[in-house]
Amino acid sequence: MGTPNKDNPPLERRQPASHLKTLDWAGTIIFLTSAAQERRDYFNNWRAAATFHRLWSDGSRWQVGEYVIMPDHVHLFVRPRYPGQIGLCAWTGWWRGLAARELRSSVWQRGMWDVRMRSAEQYAEKREYVRQNPVRAALVHAPDDWPYRGKIHDLFWRDGL
Image 1 (cartoon, rainbow, N blue to C red):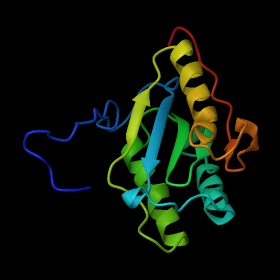
Image 2: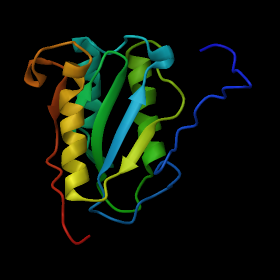
Image 3: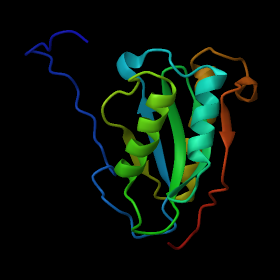
Image 4: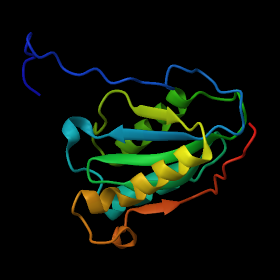
């Protein structure tokens, strides 16, 4: 990124959920995106994919549902395992730190993007967005052809929560 222009300041992105230290709601589903430093292509390999899958499979703090590992960022849907146990930022810092050590690189851009799902419709739209991401990036012709995607836990939307 270049030097900011005073006439055209950089756009600020809203960080809607990461300020929450804990969530009290077992039904919460969050759409999380974490990007590589300088958006470099660190993750489109089997070593990175296996590392993420293993770390996310723990499930004792947060459960990971569907995910897509793109070359320079990851998208995943998560739900707290036990309400109030550990915040999203702390959990994300935990797996990102372990992944950086295992991949022998300081790979992460500061911060993350997270959105708390508010309806079954929003959740379905975001899941389709994640599924189509490799197609939009012209990496494959069909979403199911992308090898670095998966699902660890079933995160079903619960109406009325």
